[in-house]
Amino acid sequence: MKQVLYKNTTISYSDTGKGTAVVLLHGFLENQSMWKDLTPILSHKNRIITIDLLGHGATECLGYVHSMENNAEIVKAVLSHLRIRKAIFVGHSMGGYVALAFADLFPQKMKGLVLLNSTSFEDSAERKKNRARAVKAVKSDYETFIRLSIANLFSPDNRERLRDTIEKVKKQALQTPLQGIVASLEGMKIRKERVFVLQTANYPKLLILGKKDGVLNYEDNLNQIENTDTQLVSFRDGHMSHIENKDELKTVLLNFFKSI
Image (cartoon, rainbow, N blue to C red; front, top):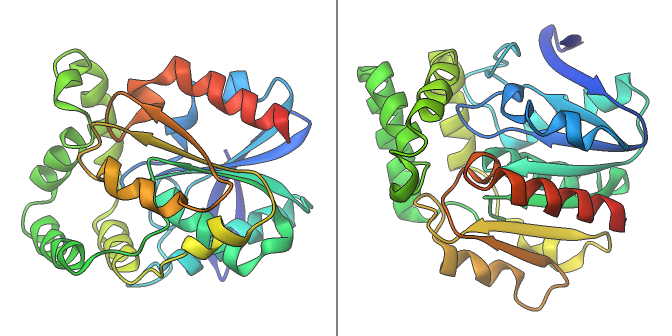
C-alpha cells in the first residue's frame, strides 16, 4: 500500500500493472482489499489503481460528513500524484456514487465508467430516513449494525453457501472506524442525482446489476439507463457481484476494458 497526503489527511492506495489506467473504488464498509482477487487478472494489460475512500481502510477521516465530492477530490489527488491524465472508473455501490461525482467534477479525466451494483439516482425520502436510522443504530451497537448490514448485501440463496466468505467480509468491515461509517452515511444521504452523466457522457458506460439485490431494487434501477447508450449486464444474485458472480464479473470487465 502507498500513501499520499491530502489536506493533512493520509490517503491509502495501490498501483499495479501497466497500460490503460483503471481506478477501482470500493463501497460502504469495504476497503481496497475487496479487489484483491480481481487485481491480478485485471492488471495483466491495465494499470490498476485501488483507493481507500475517506474513513475506510487505511485512509483517515476528513470530517463529520464525507460527501461524494470530498471522496472525488481525494481520488483526483491520487491520480495527480501518479500523473494519470485519464482513467476508466469502476465503482462498487458507494464507490459508484464517488465515480459519478468524479465524472461530474472532472469529466475530462474520464475514459470509461462502470457502475457495479450502484445507481446514479439520489436517495429516496424513505432511504434518507433509513440512513438517519442507521446512524443511530451504529452509534448504539456498532458490531451488530455491521454484521446485519453485511449479511443483507448477499442474496438469501448465497448466505449459507458463502458463509465463510461473508464472515471474512464482516471482519474487514469491522475495521472501519465509527466516524468513517457515520460520515459516509451522512455523505450518501445528501448526494445528488447524476443520471445526466449516463445520458450525456460520450465515453463508454456500463451498469452491472444483481437481480436479487436487496439494497438496490433491480427493476427500479433499470430506469436510469433508459434512452442512454449505457450497456447493461445483469447477474442472477445480490449486491456483492465481485463475490457472488466473481468469474462472470472478471470476463465482463476485461471485455469492457478491451473495447475502449
